[in-house]
Image 1 (cartoon, rainbow, N blue to C red):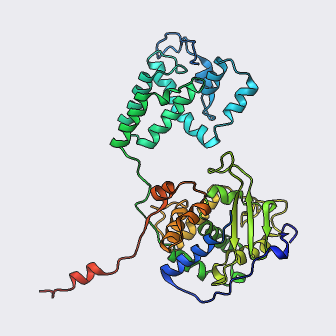
Image 2 (cartoon, rainbow, N blue to C red):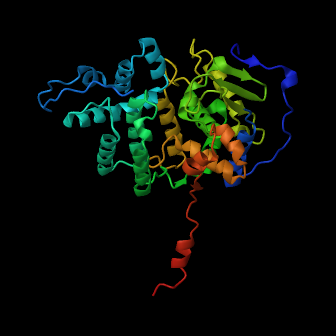
Length: 398
């Protein structure tokens, strides 16, 4: 196919000659372990005029009207007041990603409203007012993570100062208290076993008997499991950045993703040949998918396209629905587990199969083992082994 860039033959390592097949948890771990192993890789000085909350007189229209979808209007006002040029402000604002802007927008809006009720300038936050505002969030039942985001949002309003208000000793001490009172909790205490999902994917065979919808669903779920990537990264897989090495498809991700940071090279996703079971071979299935969609995609180079006309590039939400559809067909409780849970399920399975933690961190894109241990490494849910039923049947019914 024209979009396959072949690597030089001398750069291709020999194929594995290991054979055999396993089942159950050991097989699930083997699939993921093999996949993971093969990856290479100054305060604003102008006070607001006093006004009543109902009249709206004396309010600053720039804050009340501009604080909206971007979540950076308040910060823009602070930078303007500091005398920065528009071009400089644009660069500074670009340091906050869209996802951060959306999070900040919520708390900037609430912060502005909080200050209006007190006839204070929201662009000149003091430690005392910040603590009062954060306390209201705590009283409303918000947890540590949400309150910490609010602190960061308000602290950004003092980014022109030597010590932002969020780093004030009392504010830091307050956040430690919030942590003790409402410690952050991970979404799941345990994670689903990947074995039923892999069994379901095996059942979707041969590929020639699958329509495009089922083939797409199988590939998306398998890629999510064997790469442990976020939906954002799966969406960024693009044929323009793909190389066929003969034993693996390699995707370079030039886009900014969550783990992107200065000094870190572009993330790489590998889909390797899996000789132990062709039904779970991401390389083989992707090759079939590329051939099946070659005449349908037109000039669309994003890897995953809609299985229905007009066969355009799909969004993260669509990828999420496809993954949840496979989870549901496999017997996974989708009322509890989201599509993002594939990341925890696959990495937990790989760890249970004794894959070294550094390899898991490299594949998943984590820089700290703490992130994996705190949020993703879970006990794998196991079906009831019948212990309780045996106990209850151990005595004769009177």
